[in-house]
View 1: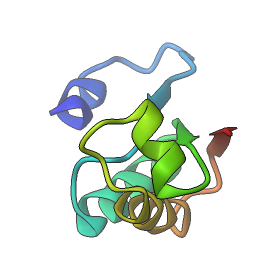
View 2: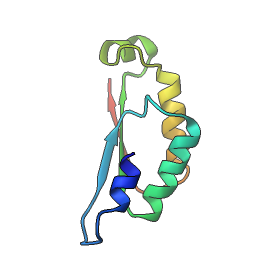
View 3: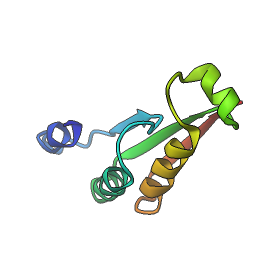
View 4: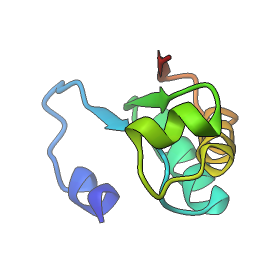
Length: 88
């Protein structure tokens, strides 16, 4: 949904940054999101909450660390515009 909304913003030299933990969606969704952000000079900011599933559970209930990492990797293969934050 947010991509359709971003497409409607007139080009007025606005910097757009999307912050996410990428815990939802599929690898295909994140691949397409990465391509879209790369093509439109949008920065993707990913927060990785915990370096193990146990630590991840402390920050994100019901989320799977492995799925989140797979989604992030799917996106960053297709964009040069990304940041990654790690919460230990």
